[in-house]
Image 1 (cartoon, helix red, strand yellow):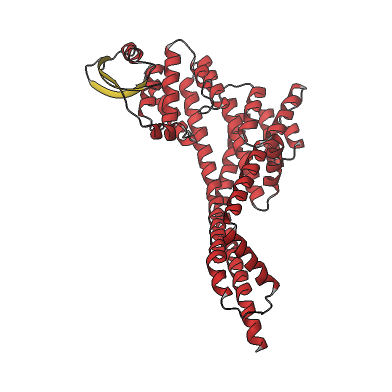
Image 2 (cartoon, helix red, strand yellow; image 1 turned 60 degrees about the vertical axis):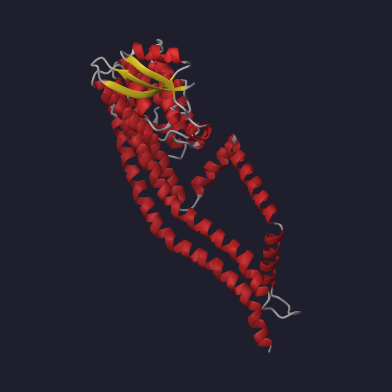
Length: 400
């Protein structure tokens, strides 16, 4: 829809300006009047095609959703109508994806639709858990409290994700640097050394291998690029399939050192999500159906789904989760205690806070542990290359 820039007078006679989306200028003016404004100037805002394409494809992060939820809670607590909150927040956000969604949601709510159902029409922005909690807040009349709880959930999720990125960042950078160093040596350094070798000398196997790799890389560089691109697409599409997701999940859990970090992250995410859903008044089975996929792990989602089926048969939550062998015994024990005492959301929050702290501590420790290993790894690559290049020179000197 077109974007319109406007200047209006509010009910107090104060001049206000902003932007909104509407199908045409008349609908834009009608919407402003319904919100209590007196339009003074209304014209279509010019946005370049490149800007629009780049902005609309931008994802809405957890931090932006957390800020939106907290601002919504504050504005609703101050007595501002829901549609005006949505319009004001939509117009001030810099993310055009979120802006477009909020303005459309505001129009739907203004037209008589419910807030939660309007959110469901934008699954690329608002998750199933978010919509379920908003619906429970609408029904129970506790929308402000639900929005605050959602903002806390999203902020915790962002911190957890940032800790994981911190742990993975250093190895990824070093690995990319090692590949670049190896490529530069093969393309530029190896040909220089070839001029130093006497004609007819028998090169060692390691040197012949490096020379062959250098020649092929310089001659058929386009094949390497094409092969890398095809391999990337193949892996991407395989990991997007059901079997690929399962294989990737199993591999993540079995990776040394990082497997433990992944498990703790998933336990923290599951516990925090389930606690938020149960605190928001969502029934246990529905909460489990949402919390399982929210972890991002197909193994956990399947285990939680089986737990839901066992609960329908009369079992507790803790027992089927324990049988999955994904959750640590202490977690299932605390869940069992929470079920017995009737204080499950509080205990789940405690579990989430404990494992979030564990992930933060472990991610910092991993950086210190991996740093010397990565230095040794890069040094080993450079050392093997240097040895392969100098070995024929040493051999000739020894023969002479």
